[in-house]
Length: 67
Image 1 (cartoon, rainbow, N blue to C red):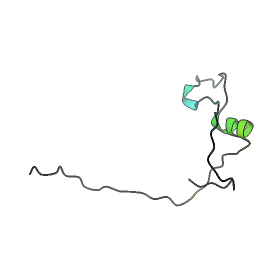
Image 2: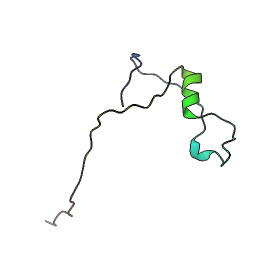
Image 3: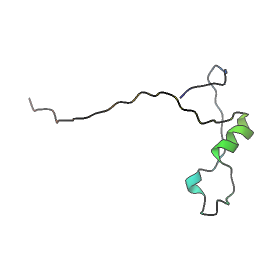
Image 4: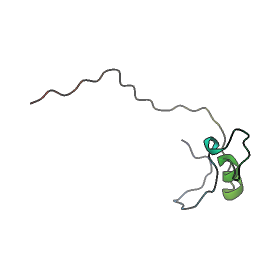
C-alpha cells in the first residue's frame, strides 16, 4: 500500500463508519461508508490504483520428518 498524502509521522484517531456487509439489502442504515468517513472525518480520499505487489507462492508443502 502506498501513501500519497505526503504526511509523515504516526497518528492515533478514531474513524466511525459502517462496513458494507453490515448494511441490509436496501443499503439504508445509520452510518457511512469507509470512503465517506475518510473524506468527512479525516479529509483524506481513498482512490483505487493499480500498482505492483509482492506475491509469495507456495507450490509444495511436506510435514517435517521425526528425528
